[in-house]
Length: 105
Image (cartoon, rainbow, N blue to C red; front, side):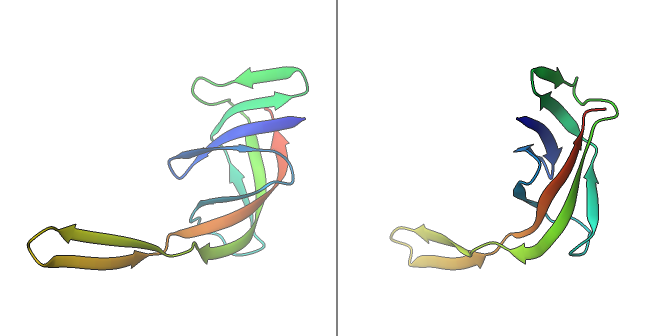
């Protein structure tokens, strides 16, 4: 089993070929190909490479399958005995991608 650890949108994701992951919004249309150059580690069989902080020449190629928003969360603020209550909703935008290739570099 081979996988890679990539960094995008301030988060780290462990991905394998065929995985669908949600990342922070990318400027790419549905069906376009995106390349993640910031690869932190790659495991291919028994070979395990770790970057310091990234692996030179390594990349993960993925295809965008959706640009959407996540489920709504409610943010409720209250101050006791002050008659203060506020309810706000938030939907975080995301890009869903399917990993197609992992290049170890």
